[in-house]
Amino acid sequence: MDLNSGICLGENEVVRINDKYFTLSPNLFESLRVKGGLVYAGRYLGRDRQRFEPSSLLLQVLAFEGGTRKVHVGRDAAWLFVCGRDIFQDNIDYVDGGLSLGSQFLIVYGRWCLGYGRYETIRDRAVIRNLFNIGDFLHREN
Amino acid sequence: MRGRSFFLERYAKLGRILTGEEVTLQAVRVNSLRASDGEVTTILEGEGVHIRKIPYLDHGYEVSASTFSLGSTLEYLLGLYSLQEAASQLPVQVLRPDQGDVALDMCSAPGGKTTQMAAYMGNDGVIYAVDASRNRLYAVENNLERCGATNALVYHGDAVLIDLGVCFTKILLDAPCSGNYVTDPGWFSRRTIRDVESNAARQRRLLSRALEVLEPGGRLLYSTCSLEPEEDELNIQWLLENHYVDLERVDGPGVPGLTSVFGSELDRRLSNCRRLWPGGGSQGFFIAKVVKL
Image 1 (cartoon, rainbow over the protein chains, first blue to last red):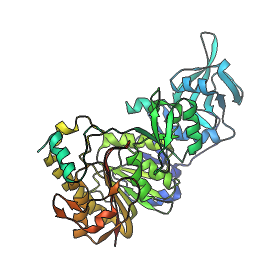
Image 2: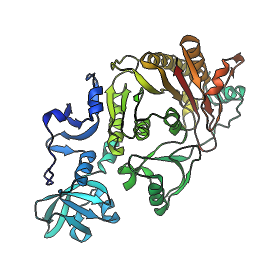
Image 3: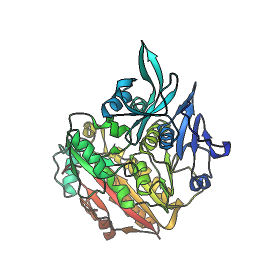
Image 4: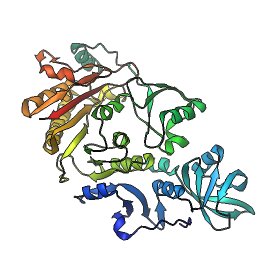
């Protein structure tokens, strides 16, 4: 995942539980006295599978950061994106950071981050290809 | 000792005539970590959802009509609201954890009340969330992530046995219970009085453990969605007889806790509890707020 973020976390700032990564507030960190049985803690960042899968919480943090690449969309495109569809260039309201092929972008609706995607051409048409979206919550609960 | 008429007759002996056909309306709770009530209601009403503020809830709205599932909207996925039945929003509202609390959610899955606690605490303080079912904890994890709750430590374990090395200022024990027929259409055909007694015994073990790890002066909120007094008033009567505790008065919808059950007179302080019988758009519920002396 490359979204042009300047955020960098040291190893001692991140707690790993199985294949998942978290950051904890100082208060929460002090409260973590027992690790046996712990499955989740604080702010979930994402998990390692075949590649790093970011959490919606991490993407939201990145969306608030000034320098990250962002594509802003309206409600209709936002809904299609969380349903798993790609975003056609016509449906982009505006872009933070220039569109260049192969670059990854956060998809933002209002102040909310919906996921992220990569700018590609598919059958000669430019799209933001859907790489992750918050509709994932529905698949997990099923 | 089972079946529809058996249980309805029990409720009649407790002073409540029920038909067994009562229903609950869908309700949502606005997640104050993510949005204001006005923001969410404006969006939902704009989408054609008919909602009405539930007067006794801080952030609860009754849904009387919607042409689509409220569990798969953009705003739901963004964590701006959760689907949470009206009565089940009361326990955390009554416990009212705040930023200075070290709180325990003893039976936390699926996490609706855990995220509600995080909202009251403004994502500050600490919530220890425990559940015995690893599979059900995945729902807790998803709810915490979706709702932006970041002040929880989640443990897989039996709340009776787990030792987290902490004493708590507030504890929520929304105990596993026999449930009620409003939210479970097959309830009358499945439940027996033996189930009720077995659940009540398990609940007493959880209550004892809660008091072991609660600070003196701390608050324990005990709730069930069972209508059976064995799991409600009689368990709190047992608590008053066996532990150094008192009951704080719970106001709100419903009626005071029963002080007379099947001919037995109970401690008068049980009227400080709150009992919600099914009807009026909500399911049944029981709430007791216990102070450790």
